[in-house]
Image (cartoon, rainbow, N blue to C red; front, side, top):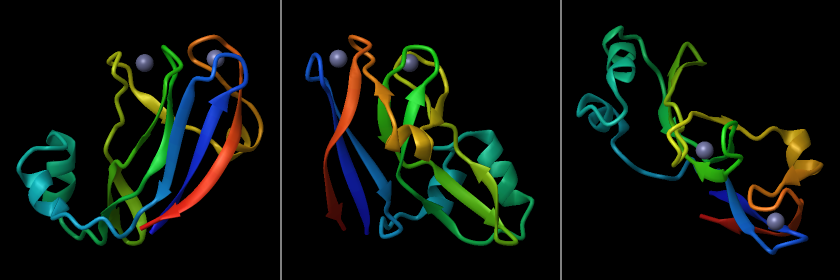
Length: 127
Ligand SMILES: [Zn+2]
Ligand SMILES: [Zn+2]
């Protein structure tokens, strides 16, 4: 269960869809991690033991290099109720992406194509 938002550039019409939440995605993350899908660091965290909930949650990300936006669901490994590990989100250009913060979502997002203003044009629920 989660929700999504559509943003559209007011100048060129470039559109992006952001997804949030999604605890309902059912995968065997432990197996995927041990299969090496998330790299060495994730395996180390699992092998250190004492891990709790392992899940993936959707959030919007932005690339600091090329400005692209995208939603992704990195895997999170918890230990004692805290995030012990979050898998990195990489842009198509190869650079690491960071999470878009709340104030950016409420305020102004910049269009990666033309530099124009992106505005929220719709919200919906999904499961
Ligand atoms: Zn634009
Ligand atoms: Zn990029």
